[in-house]
Image 1 (spheres, helix red, strand yellow):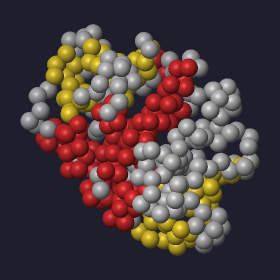
Image 2 (tube, rainbow, N blue to C red):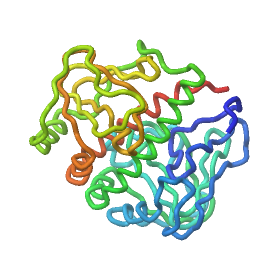
Image 3 (spheres, helix red, strand yellow):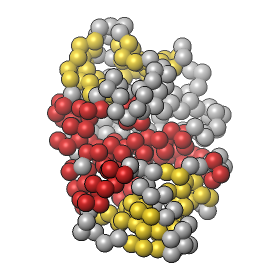
Image 4 (cartoon, one colour):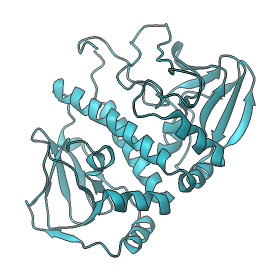
Length: 320
């Protein structure tokens, strides 16, 4: 994809089933689409990470089957979802039919069976940034946040799949910003927090057998390019995360660092140092998988954090 071509980066319901490097061109009224390789759920999609069979198992475990008439709207651009646990917000798996995504007056995508939409607003609690309309009569499996958490405990692999796809997009976005020298200034960054007190307390109880790590100010925690053997939950202090020597994020108590390399088992994309005296909880991949399976709220918090980070980084991409 040429780096100097105008791009329209859409953060809502960009549909995790798509090939992550294909994005609709700004000003092009023709819907952009990447077709699932086969409508059979057992076939792989064009996204190497997305597995339609895992998605179907996830939605069947706790979702609700709905028939939607042609022309009916699933949700509207800028529709408020209020909060992470807003009961009215839903995400969908398209089982039959076609769904059109629209921003303003422009159709930006046509979704096919086996594809997911509406997930970003449900996870992040943000407003919808696209309108979804049934292009034909459709059958979908819908899921509220309550159902989403129920399904996580039954099909935890789905959470790992979503995290992997979000991380892939975050890496692509960070690389694009770095190439265009458009990484956000550290003065504009807020200190991130992933886990609220109740979740953090439960996490510490679940991980009470893991030894905590204490670091002095300036101590390195991880280095870009190295293999990620663990992630860290910040219990005390503040950590600075940098890409190519530029601070892109600050993490305080209740935040997580290093999860990207741990989840997708790729080299670390960023470096991190202790800005103050810090206490960290290191979590290995096996510990991480156990926490996802046993504590759905842990997975929801991580997904929301990744969605928020992706939105923030995407907002800094130049329009041309």
